[in-house]
Image 1 (cartoon, rainbow, N blue to C red):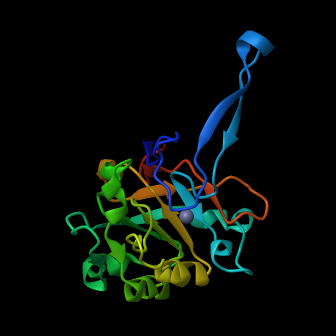
Image 2: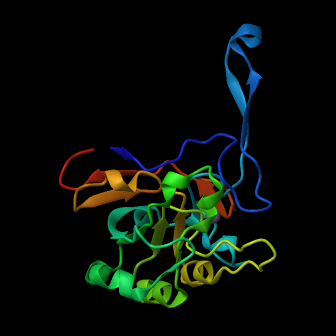
Length: 218
Ligand SMILES: [Zn+2]
């Protein structure tokens, strides 16, 4: 079982305005006889999924997602080597496109997870909106990325753009962000699990993302 999840602590990179993660003792062994913690967490903290409701008032909430889409065969698209803030285009995806179909998730492997916690983590390559449309047109409903977002993170003073989010979530799809360790998937037939917490009416959820080889038992 390969862990595709970043560790969760207060150093987790986040988009502007998102809550800072915290885990504090609420009860302790020494005073109360048990350890219990209080968690402060955003719905988009660390490795997580975005539900359509993140951007669409009438979109599916995270507790309404079809779980069978979120434990599924994955096509890993190797786009390592793309320069910072460059665009991932359909030309980059084309060698993998014959495997894009309903029930398969597409995972963009940018290699950016190694910058987790560094300033340049926000300078990841981003997906061209036309390429996002073509992925969805093939029937795919889950797009994952080992970076903060499939969209470009704005530079200071720039306006936020969420074109890819609108295309994926607007098609009833799900986005998984901040995946880790994709380079350790060294086999051709990965199954990836991106199961969210069952948070009533919520727009997203932290996940424990894992992968295993379809031809072997986990
Ligand atoms: Zn998100």
